[in-house]
Length: 77
Image 1: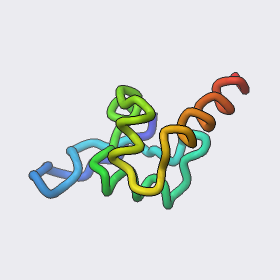
Image 2 (image 1 turned 180 degrees about the horizontal axis):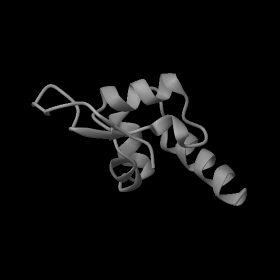
Image 3 (image 1 turned 90 degrees about the horizontal axis):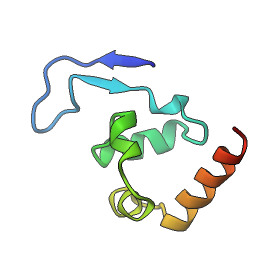
């Protein structure tokens, strides 16, 4: 698991340790930046969100897109 230490967290900064979300198939640098802007920095934060909740937090994503991507990548396993 790739983690990066960012120092002490404040209300306006990310948590002390973040995951490299780009390691997830289907997440590139642009989507990772959008996830960070929405306050999502870790695999756990991403995993607990439903497609609807994720779509609400991240601009430009729909629950349908998220579900489709998830199903495509899950079927490859």
